[in-house]
Length: 258
Image 1 (cartoon, rainbow, N blue to C red):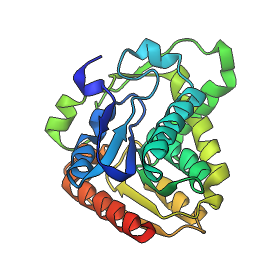
Image 2 (cartoon, rainbow, N blue to C red):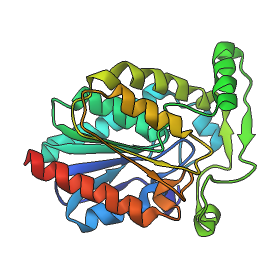
Image 3 (tube, rainbow, N blue to C red):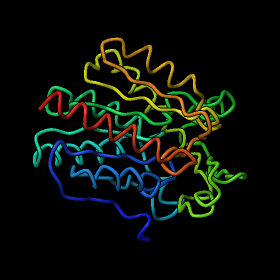
C-alpha cells in the first residue's frame, strides 16, 4: 500500500470529522480537506474502504456491506473518543456518509456532507450497472478502463491520482445497493446537510444532488454548485473553495451544537 493510499487519522478536538473517499479512490482524494480541517484543530479520520488502495482484483470482491461496516466502525470509534462527529463523503463515500450519518444522527452525528453525490449516475452507466446486477453470480470479471482518466480539470491532480485506472464491474454494481440504502433514509435526516457539486461533473449528474436536496426535506440543507469543477472536487480547480465551504460548515454546526 502506498502512502497516498493509506488511511488518515489526525488528532484534535471534537467534533471529529470523518471524510470518506469515492469508488476506486483513496483518502488522497480528500487530502486538502484533511489538511484544512486538521489545521483548524478538529480531529480528522479518513478511512480506506475495503478493496481500495491495493489492486482492482481486491476491489472486485468488495461489497456495499463491507464498505458500510468500515465507515460505521470508523464513526463509532470517533464517537467513542469525541462524543460528536460530522460525516462527509465524496461520490460513493457520500452514500456511505448519508446512510451511516442518518443511522447515527441521534447518537452523536451532528451533521452530514455529500460532495459529488453518487445518488444518481449518468443514464448509460446506471443502466449498465442494473444489467450487471441482474446477472448476479454469472457476471464475468470485467474491468472497465477509465479511458479519459480521472474526472478532474486540474492537470496535476489528473496525473497524480493514485486511484485505480480500471473499474471492476462486480464492485461497481454495489453502488446501486448504496443508492437504495441512502434513499430509504434521506427523509429521516434532520441534522444539517451540506451538498456540493461540480457543474462540469461527468461522473455524477447535478440532478443527483438536486434529488438529494429535495428528499431531505426535514434537514437544514446548504447546497453549492461550483461552476468550474468536475467530479474530483477535493483536488480540482476550485479545491480551495471546497475546503473553505466545508470548513465553514464544520465550524458553524459545531458551534451551534456546542
